[in-house]
Image (cartoon, rainbow, N blue to C red; front, side, top):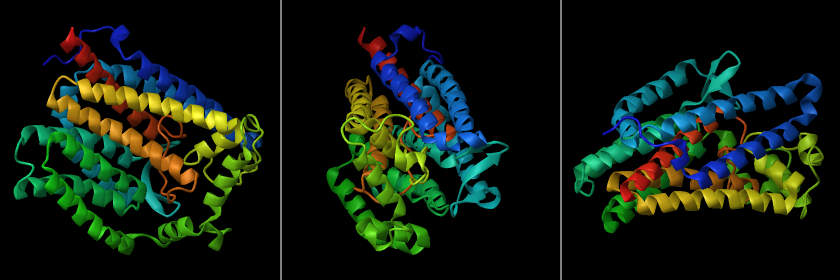
Length: 370
């Protein structure tokens, strides 16, 4: 198994690179526009320059990871898994609370979110586990080990609390097990049981999370409290019309009516300032990314790479669906970033890391088929 793929960068999937490049450029423009109301304090340029730095660094990571055989990352996954668990445990003791959650390590001006790393590690570790336990996943022992493996990081992330990331783990596990060939009756039975105990999540949720769920059902019940973000997001997107109000001209974003408009609600800014046309274009870019990923999954050279590519694509699909859904009022607000668009280094770097692995799987597919 070669450590470095002996192929030039010309063999990388150009469609995926083009989509990620466009999303990154649009992200920088929208973050600059979304934070323009902070210009007098210098935050506008601070946000833009920081994100520009993260985009630059993350593209180097993308190209580096794409040149490393994906099997190497799978081999390292046990170490990465236990390091992740250690970081998630440590975070509970030394992490700083923000908006009622303890999700970040703060290192001077920078912040690191271990739960973003956990998504990467989960996909790699679950791929390794499934590949090494062919035919054993369906038996009771295999199923128990699978859900211990997944449940440990899920629990540590849930108690931060970070409900959004915790829920993202569920479709990842479901589709990876489905693609692996797990018998449907075991798969349906297991996740039916999980659905049955889902109401228990309510017992560990914080008050503000419960209010978010209730405000999703009826946001007008508390328009200045728990329903505020959802109402302002829908107003912003609806007021954008067909072509939008133009960059730096969105009233909801420029007057800071939308909370976290450069992170979780960046799509609301896009809808207001670029309008329906701009929003649809962004969705089209994600569609292109996902379709290219699905092609790689279908034509992957072996079972291991198929399972791994599936996990990566499900992460992107779920995050896009949840983020856009919550800004439109179709889903509760759970604080999930929009891949390659939302402000923040952790989300961007690990999204690029996953994209790099996907590109490497594509390279091995080309090598396999040539």
